[in-house]
Image (cartoon, helix red, strand yellow):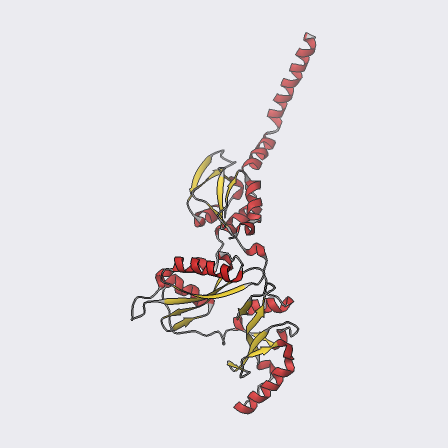
Length: 335
């Protein structure tokens, strides 16, 4: 029996010694797997940290206080992934309070809980100046500077040709030629068909001594009804084409990013070559996106960390798998 135990112990020691001499590479791979943040997870972390919506660009400090202008107004709306719509205008003064009041009013009037990611700016009125084009709205809130009123009628991002229209959809449009509404009553029911537009174009050409063809006619306004019964409106080309694709204006619900990291966070960066580990404190979204943009295989969160849902839910995350699952289901935490 003693001989048996001695033999077993000798075999065990030999195996341990052999493994320590021949599997340094395996040990290094094991450490790597323990500390590595996958590229896929890093991309989701960056996407969440850099996620922007129209609400995030609003800068209440841009409300003018000179030249006798003491207020500005946002013409805006909620539109959720199902296409439900609620239009509103909000003064820039007492912005946060006014926005929350409108959000609650939208719920009272429609029974639909819109989220911050459902908020979109249509145009900004600064004194007597209208800012309509998206790039000009962004620039205004970044610089608080603006010029003369702009228009969308000359912008291809707001134009849809007749060949792109689905006349089988139950909706109304405003058709334009020369930047002017083609039809005197403005709205044209798609159910009237293209022949109605042809007749209106003949009348327009006769009245204005022009010779426009259907190729000169375009649509820049769409009025529709969502599946829930709300009346919707859109002027953007990409949204109008989205509607004509299936006679409904919708978007992927996963586009709603309703989770935010709770700061500060601690992240370890471990170098496999030197064996050194350094800890970094992350204070905000910009820091987080920058940190996870390089060498993700050296990074790991010091868990637990917290995520805050737009609906007030606080998620305590214990590992990478739980973090990835949470980010994949961000839309579940919208308000």
